[in-house]
Image 1 (cartoon, rainbow, N blue to C red):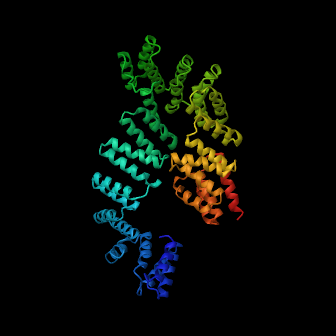
Image 2: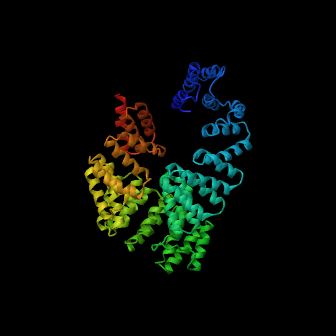
Image 3: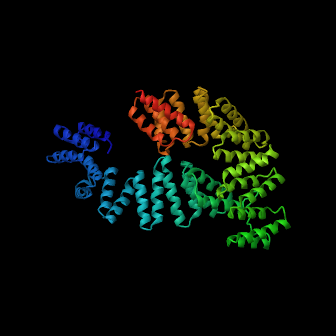
Length: 546
């Protein structure tokens, strides 16, 4: 129970819900709560004994139940249940305390029965719905678990935290072998929480089961970017790309052409790499342009950790077909199979020395440089690529990436210039509009312009946490602190340093110094880049001066 609930009880006493004329009761109840939440358990126990030594309002038991639960006195809660259950039938918090007490005292059947009953009465309570769904799963009743989740989602407002229910729903559908329904649920989960790494992993595997290889590749890649890496998934992604990706984005099987390719693949699967390489080399001598043979050769060389030969072969193919994306992309993806990024970057630089305007090599080299924190080299590659890009969407993405890199270097004029370029090429991109809104909020100091851009972003993705953070920042700059706080409080669970620091600034402006300090300390553990470190230091200095 939060401290503020105590004052609710006192107010209730004025209206007659608690015995109004018993000042002693209020005094004892107040001190019991105070001692409890200040950590003085023995004194809290003494005050509760005094409180119940004489007539006391039934509502004071809510605080007592919380005390008993926090001190693991679950048998006492069970003893009180018969006399309190009916009185607190409409209090979800108390009923959940009863459920926990039943579980802790090994009365699992009663606990399950109670939580299922509560799920019928409290359809909008997320904790009850989740526990009820888990109970049905333990009882091997997945259909009822789905119905419970649907009842909660259908009766509740759409909230970002609801992503976990769609994730659980998707997992249940997988258990039921209903993969299409599972895919639909995980897509809704990711709409609410686009940075949920486990959601992307499940989504990618479901796309793969559906035969949607392009989407599966994208899903696995997103998972790796969000999770920070996973060796098993990296190898799976690399193998999947080499088996299915073609320049026309058609899904083909490496075994679809000749018996020699079949034999090479069989040897590869048997881990007889030297023989497999001999077979595929012979195939390429017979048909030097066979894309499937080339891809299998790279897969074999990668398994052998022969990255020098793989780099040499890809250098040749890139030089022969400079306009094709597949070979630069294959070279880049070797990073997921153990090839050092420095080796990949050096290979790209060798090619670019002869073909400085090669768009795809510049783009993939820039990507590797960014991942290796070589941002200066990445800027050079992207600036070479941008004038040569003919397709507007790709050009807009490139300009946007340049803007982000210049922002990291505190080159705000160049940042703004490239954002304008990106917006010219694709005015509907919500991320570009969000970045422009952020620029005008901070460096441009024009919240009216900022609001125009963020409105466009939110019209496309109304629940995107980064867009909502920018909206909150605009409100903060306009000194609409309460409105900014309402948005940022809902984003705190994302554990993003920038969002937490914005929330700290809002609390500081509202003179809530204690909360400002709490969120600043949370942000301190999450800072990733120079901009976040700079913002953190500024906030810490501000708090130190108060």
